[in-house]
Length: 210
Image (cartoon, rainbow, N blue to C red):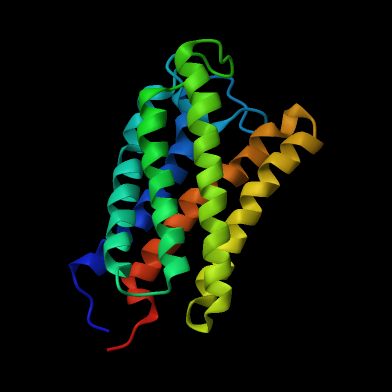
């Protein structure tokens, strides 16, 4: 296929994943005593976190690249794919907008101690909205992908992402708090990873041939 500019925007999804991964790995260098096995990723970017500045620097491309990539996917799939696949992609994009804006407006004020308005919004408004939209979008994509042989791979990728999202809370509930951070990362990387998947699909024109 002959790629156009919008196809190359798909590579931003991969860049966003790399940016997020680098932030998760290197931001703890500025957070003395941070325990990745027991602490949440959001602790690294909390308002009073010593690693907030480094996190913002490394993760700067993350939200921007994510949104540009997903909006490009939304534009590209108009008139293409099946209705269920398009709806799933649109829902996933809405989730990413809410995540990008919501967490920026309401960062945790104190790591692991939600007791202020912004913490309440972060924990009880933004996060549930993100989780529900993530699950809804991935379920729709799984159903739509598995029903269409051409896009079965997309459905399988959505199923893997959804499995990671569920594995996180299951592990956090079943195992001691000392392992909270490990399983929390399954959930947070599911969305970032699936964004990269959609970006790769866009780069390849969703398998279309001239």
